[in-house]
Image 1 (cartoon, one colour):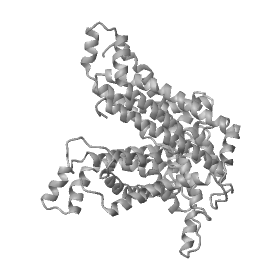
Image 2 (cartoon, one colour):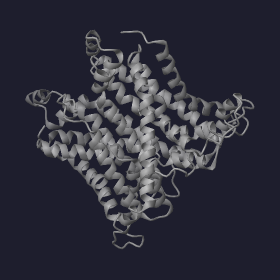
Image 3 (tube, one colour):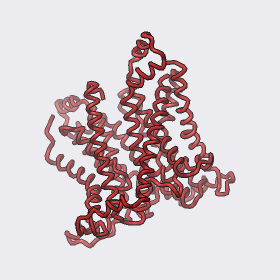
Image 4 (tube, rainbow over the protein chains, first blue to last red):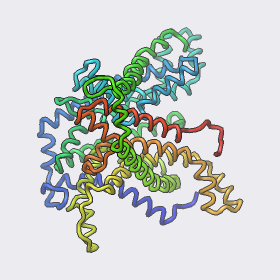
Length: 265
Length: 269
């Protein structure tokens, strides 16, 4: 392999700087005792303290985490069952229809998902708030889980199941002790992605949330519309910190898992 | 696995499809036929074909095109150079991390950066220019959108470049093709799939952005997404909002058909 030329390195460096500059800019000014993002007066942690002293913000944070965990859990169950179900469908036309329906929510713009769910929830009489947000997050996470689990199911050797049945395993045993352990990495990946989708979502939540309920991104939007507030900077510092920990953790878990299975990732 | 138990596993999933995939689309189409009082009418469609909405659609497409174009322009070389680095997976991960930070936070950062007293204006002043109001301009809107979409474009292009068999490039060079010809006739056609899925994941969301237009473009830029949000949450005219949504869905389907992957026969058009 040829070595990277100097101009290529400079180009890559610029891309990296531009990608990270806004994030570090935010974090840098989160320590500013002055009230703006322009001149740095002196170092302070007051904005971080403000985040933890603002009980409204803490409630929103807890809401966000609860919605993310619950919706990821529910969608992982539905999605895993769905993937197992799809594999059993022998009619290829029907299978393709199911798969294309599965992808509709993945490619649809958030605005359309949000608007159509708003109509749906109003029609069937679900009060806008926690319930509607949770349902919406479950709804858009299910296809992601299916897409993570399906490849694992497809690469699984069918003779494993036949062997288990020959050896006297019941159908329940086959499910619990053969299929589920085999597709476990896919299930974890699906859960994890559903979690991050839920934590990250703004547009859909914005449509289906009522007055009394808010998640972090909806709250950030209304704070940002009101103008610059260094509390938002402090939040972004915390978010960045948590993200990096999660990403690094995920990277090590997956690279260790792929080493264990002989790098079949 | 053709047991009854695994067939019944489909039940909650099919229920999910019916309730959250089919029903919402049907409802959007149904609502597009209602006026603000709930009477059946085709007026919304008539309204869509008036100059106001056509102009908006056209400008929405124009911005989406600009955003996709610049994103591609930045992302292709980046993806290309990334595949040439040592530890390329790690570098790719570093490109992906910013995309995991909440989009609103990154957009919010630019309110400060582009502000009248922000670092960009301070930088310009060093060269003797007067500070400009950069926030609430079209350029700032396109810039922030490109910034947001770059990782999503790099990922598919990186994957297709990574899958490219390097011996094909060596062969082309051995046969006397210049670097440029090799790129144009070998590398680019073979990575077209990645480029197409990159365009897909950028163009469709770019048509429907609404938070960036509100925060950065200060309502100067109206995309289809902004219009839908406006109709649903501000004007409360769900009928008109649904009509715009129907057209957005149509455009989306068309774009997917154009950029969709053809059968894997290795056909070069």
